[in-house]
Length: 299
Image (cartoon, rainbow, N blue to C red; front, side, top):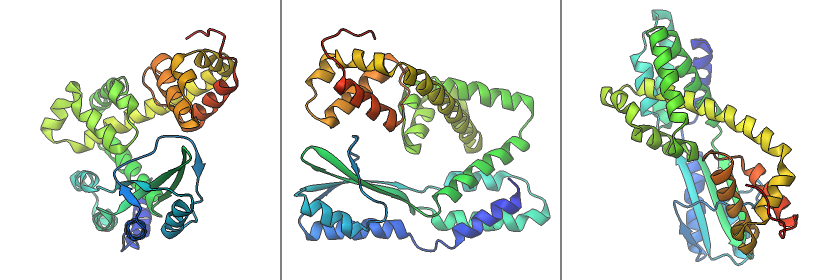
């Protein structure tokens, strides 16, 4: 990605002068409280169930919850924090002709700091979760800027030794159980900060290199996840029979309980703590629910 492309993306971000998604969250909270619905936040219902259409408005979600007799909404939101990426851009050296693009990028990033990037709302009806989620319109553009800044860093790095260090630390981070279990950016950052081998980088305040390491580790895990799902898909029937024979799965009385039991079992025995896509867990849980539970499967 060139600086001109970066400037184009920043220009798109610059039109986001209001936290539209954040205003939607506030609208939802007001509507819920006005109708006597409790709003529990931060909270996420981790289960398969009904996915409500993204075209629904916050008021539509509240009305659906009320119509189905829900007593609470579970709200989770991801807020944008741009301080680290702004600091990284400021540390780079730019040619005079590129400084306008840099300044536009910084202005746009500072403008959306604190905006809501993603929101997820859930409620439960008859034991079945109903979920609604929305991403900010600029979420993809922000991700592109993050990737671009990382690539610029690689171009101005200290040479092979730095690349080797980043690769080594990314591999160490990708092996860390807490990082492998992490789902959100906050959890990834927390796991990285807790890893002893990364302590010197934190002490130096090198946020740019830390971002490189985290992104490198995520790339490694994404490839591992793709490879692992391909392998497990080929063994789905065998895995389903083994899972169906476990006490935890047999004792689960709902789809939510079966999915949670499936997630714990497959992460404990087959993924080395690596979280797998929700679709695969749902498919495996459904297959195990149909499988003969009297047979003793192999872990």
